[in-house]
Amino acid sequence: MARQLDEQIAGRFAVGRRLRVLDVGMGQGTQALRLARAGHQVTGVERDATMIAAAREALAGQPEGIRERMRIVEGDGRDTGVHFLPGSFDVVLCHGVLMYVEEPDPLLAGLARMLAPGGLLSLVVRNGDALALRPGLHGDWTGALGAFDTVNYRNRLGLDVRADRLATLTAKLAGIGAPLHTWYGVRVFTDTAPDGAPVPDDLEALLAAEERAGRTDPYRAVAALLHLCGVRG
Image (cartoon, rainbow, N blue to C red; front, side, top):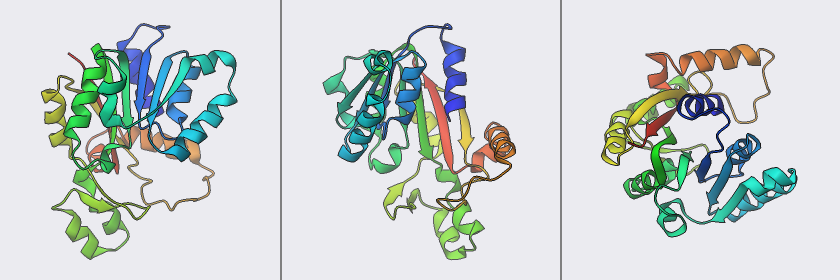
């Protein structure tokens, strides 16, 4: 996802431009910190105290210049209008968040309002059109059959969450003024790998295969995750 995001940023903004980035649901701040290291002004929003503590610890170990470029805000992604003015950011990230939001429409509309004209909205969501694949590949035929007609599923943490379908999100992005520009598949071949699996010896080949599949039809359509990039009109 980092390579895909960098590709979209490079294609939309002048080289060397310091972008204003908002990372909603930043988690431990991995992506936010990476962008701050690249020279951008980054604001991370997170409500989980454990994640915030981890992000602050990671940030504390960075050089002063990077620390000055990153701000951490404790809050809910649905309250962006409380913290920021409309059009305040060139790039807005919301990665791995929508699956935990029962009604995502207000959140999406709020994210779009944060974008300056021409700004980039980057979403990473669970692929609702491929929910049957994981149970099917594990031989869970009952689970696979039950996954075809729903966007609800239980994740690896045991939480009941939801997925999004590409067509539905495409329509929603158009409706909030940040129409879909491009999209990628994420975890086409590796979704069934167990947590904590050792790094394979052929990691570079694996990553190359994933990267190629995530850009290529029909493979990207059955990826576990979708990375969607919308652009504010």
